[in-house]
Amino acid sequence: MTEKQAALPADDGQRRITLRGDDGEELTLYVLEGTRLGGRDYLLAADSREEDGEFYLLKDVSSPEDAEAVYVPVEDEAEQTYLLDIFRELLDDIELETD
Image 1: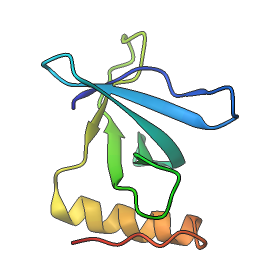
Image 2 (image 1 turned 90 degrees about the vertical axis):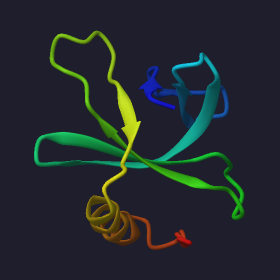
Image 3 (image 1 turned 135 degrees about the horizontal axis):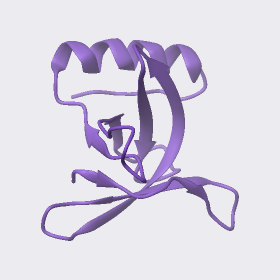
C-alpha cells in the first residue's frame, strides 16, 4: 500500500484513511493519532478499533504541489522505533505491541 486518500471523519466520527496499493487494492484504516516531526506528518493507524488489530506507521511523502497527501509505510527500523516511542507517549491508554 503506498497511497492515501483524505483522512476524513466517517459517519461514526472516526477518522479513517484509505490506502491504495499499486495494484489498486484498497485498505481502510482508523487513524489513531498524528504528529508532525521535522516538517513531515506521520500517522498511527490501525485496521481495527478492537485490541487485536494491526497498526501501521505512515509518513506523508507528498510535495506541496500535490492536491492530497500521500502516505507510505515507515520502513526504516530506527524511524519506526522513534515514532513508536512518541505515539506511546501520546496514547498512554493504547498498548502497541511489535513482533
